[in-house]
Image (cartoon, rainbow, N blue to C red; front, side):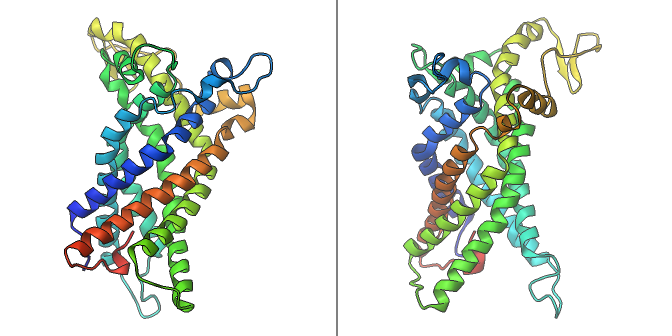
Length: 336
């Protein structure tokens, strides 16, 4: 039985998220700017086409909204993941030829992480929309970037959830790739250390093994899913413009429906200017070629290598520490 309570998982997940937000947020800002359609106009020198100083200013713009939302979203993710993984493992039927269960463990981990992501994304989406739009605000503006972004959604706050599908569409394949690789790498490293008598059983050792495994798996998954991330960035950056353009319609009593705008009489009106993920992807290829879908991929790989390693390393170390402080023990099979 695990020595961790739901509170332990929430606290450890919150500490991990806070650590990542503070340390690797600037890299995320650079990635957003590289993937934005205004990159060439705002962040490159017209004559040389090389990055200008503006690209590196205001790298922490929008971090406040992320800290507020990331703490509950990460707690929700880890709580859902841990409990779902434990449930699936318990329900997985075993036979003499399959002592660990008929369903392969990587599939159980992928399914559990996917369900956890759907819950987490519902909480995180508004913060992601605010964050990415705030990251694009000019650093010379006298108004706080986050407040300036929030003002655009004042008349249409539901637009903050416009990027949910795009965020889930990126995170689901990312976690489905990352977590099975992470679990396998961690298991392999620990087996190697056990075989050579290197295991010390300390919190630091556990955290470092987790960080290395998670960072490596996360970097690979991040590079593979870069095209989806580029499209997601475009959708979220356009959310603020759509919120502003639809505000006058909302004030006139026009309601939004699933297929577009619906007026007071219930008549459907097609939204103008809204593009789906497929259309945005084709637009990027048309403007920049296939390489446009991979813009920021290397930076995202580095950011995820550091972020995932720190995130899960701090999370697992926090769980072990909190359990040990009460005199409890976290069993190996109950770890992330």
